[in-house]
Image 1 (tube, rainbow, N blue to C red):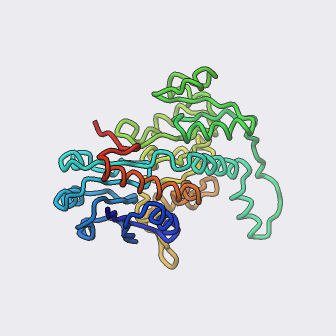
Image 2 (image 1 turned 180 degrees about the horizontal axis):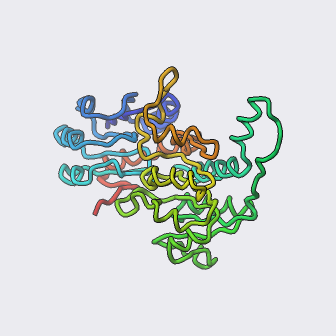
Image 3 (image 1 turned 120 degrees about the vertical axis):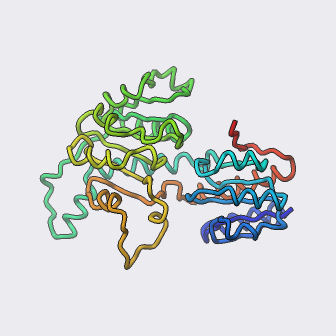
Length: 331
């Protein structure tokens, strides 16, 4: 058995080597992301493992089919960049890693909120200029706020537990309700109720056609004045221009963002000595009430190890048995 893994970073290599040693399977680690230009490297292999934010193309899966490869395992959760018709056409089995570390994402989302509530970016800027005064940058306490969690899957529930630990009131919305949370009476029936009641709205849902730009001008208009927005899920969930308008008019007091709808080419790239040319991103980045991290919520030792080793387990299972625990259904 031979597996080829694309986009392998230096921090992933030890966990890949550990898996190879434990499973006695040959794995070729390719540092470059998977593209039509390098898919030919997969010829002679039995399965492909990959992780990237950029879209996978039909040509990639066509080549895999030509090479007799029908096992494709993602090291991440999202499959919105996988062309469904292509994997169906070429009979490619796809797996993901649905829960590499829910706590990793949840913890950073709460960290982002606390930093905004306590005005940390503002104080850092003031103090760097020698101004150590408190006023006028008075903080809010999380224990006095209502947090609306949109999406109560593994990550959403992990975030809820942390928010509850701070003493916040937590409400939730999900199309698919968790029975235990249902018993607690946490759910509201509509997103409009979240918008009307929450002081903080945090998104923990996958990117789907139905929720593209779910936070738009209309949604922001229904929210409480001075609401905080957290997006540690997918950039496409927020209409960024609408968010900027809501920040400008004070409807949104602050935003913690680990994703941005046009982040490819910006995040996980060294921009030292060069100017980012995306004016919308620059607008957000310049604000001290917007905290941006470069899609790094997942980036912990535990999560990276799970992403690497679970994806390899999935791929090995596809090759051996034609099925995997985390196979993605596109039906």
